[in-house]
Image 1: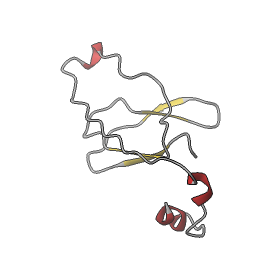
Image 2: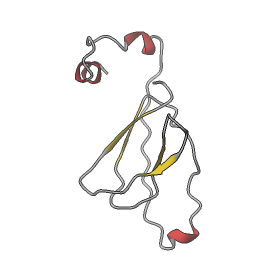
Image 3: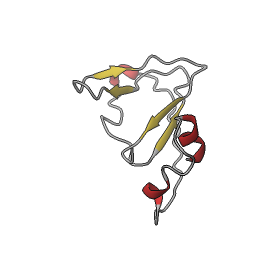
Image 4: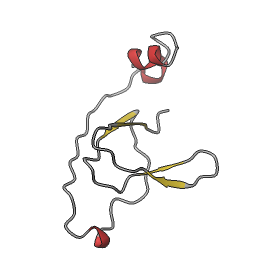
Length: 91
């Protein structure tokens, strides 16, 4: 978190108070491509509970993000060379 704070122009320890007495965890998921995506329901709209989600789509679509202004959901086009970093509920 210190490197993230520095990259945003904040002092290194800016986020420490958010994580005092917190439990850390790592959750790994791998979703294989669906053979019939038109029939897939998916996980539904949700917010990630943690601080940071690192997501790679591997060329498979379906990711949407919700805009803060207006609340519209926008589809994120998959790009094989791109990894998405998504802030969770903590931020």
